[in-house]
Amino acid sequence: MNIVLVTEEEVRDGRVTLTDHRAAHIRKVLRASLGDRVRLGIINGRRGSGIITAIGKGASSPVCLLVDLGEEPGPPPEIDIILALPRPIMLRRILTQVAAMGIGTLFIIHANRVEKSFWDSGLFDDHGYLEFLRQGLEQAVDTRMPEVRIFRRFRPFAEDYLPQITASYQNRITAHPYGDARLVDCLLPGPGRVLLAVGPEGGWVDFEVGKFASLGFSTCTLGKRILKVDTAVVALHAGISAIREMQGRKR
Amino acid sequence: MNIVLVTEEEVRDGRVTLTDHRAAHIRKVLRASLGDRVRLGIINGRRGSGIITAIGKGASSPVCLLVDLGEEPGPPPEIDIILALPRPIMLRRILTQVAAMGIGTLFIIHANRVEKSFWDSGLFDDHGYLEFLRQGLEQAVDTRMPEVRIFRRFRPFAEDYLPQITASYQNRITAHPYGDARLVDCLLPGPGRVLLAVGPEGGWVDFEVGKFASLGFSTCTLGKRILKVDTAVVALHAGISAIREMQGRKR
Image (cartoon, rainbow over all chains, first blue to last red; front, top):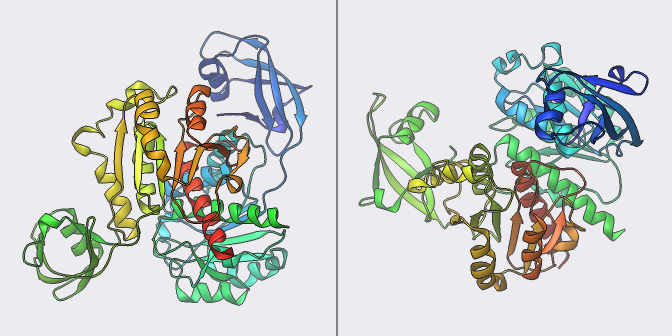
């Protein structure tokens, strides 16, 4: 945890009182004491620090902080990801990693090769997935929570919803181990948002690749090596970011 | 497992007999039967397929394959990585991921912020780490096993060993959250090998950054976001690969 995140509702009169794992972190890991500043931010809001105004010694005693938030949140990330639902253990890791790397919206969808039982993981009850996104923000010192949209059926997503939003993305990419283009060929130079579709273990089926292609997605590969979905998501995000930065330098 | 890997010693007269988890994989996951071909490769050797010449139905009965290896191993990867020893659970994941993405040599070293207890994980007894590298190769359909070199003390590595090998790398990069340059500025255009040094959680200490800098390493960051080591390793590898591919296109 490189930043303590609080919700807007937790701040009252410029002060916040913590009693949960965040208090324990401040006490045990940061070993902070009265008057110290710790990095603090409001989820979807400003960042800065909290000055400790009270800190008990007991493991469950509260930590009170005076909030001092001088910094705007960073710019919204340009990358959004469509993710075919992976197995729960992998989804948790991907949620934390994409939140750490920075994405705008994560669309979690069904696909032909997604096992139906993956939907029963409990991560979608009571927004259980938010905890893992929050861990990614705490790691990356960010406050901007990615949006998550969930589609339990492929066709309503691909046929009804997706056509409405594609126009807002300059770059639309389907990642596919057997894609015919390389990432560097798929990204148009210039600014603009990127929508990246990452399939399940075993990949998208032809019908799905076709649906994306009909909406202007180019089918793109990272190379001949077949990667696990969690590795592929991080590698694609990093590859896209590096290419766009390089394109930016040339302008 | 996208390729069944065997050692050279296991192949006798062009045939191999499997009885372990690989036999179980062929039977249960691939559901292969007599006469089927399965992807097969020799560790550090050629790739191709194995034709099933005998397959019992019992869970522990052997699978016999006739080996047909038409394909050379891929070119050796251009990226080598120096990794400050992370906690064991993270090391396992990194081993699998770097083997899947492709690296030449992994130097696992001690550093100031490495907890000494991490060396007692058992991964270094009897080359226990090889199992995780092999899983990465099986995932990526590769046969080329990364070399691993282990240095339990930083100074002998940085002062005695490293100076002997740096000349063979055109690009030397220390990854550091507070580095002063971006990845795109650190990579020289043109071919040539890359040596990337990734620090522990908490980063390299100044003394270590200085040692690398004195050997021609540029100190380089992925941006303001602080990433976990496993995420950072994959992101750096993918970023370097994307930039080099783009540089290659321009030549």
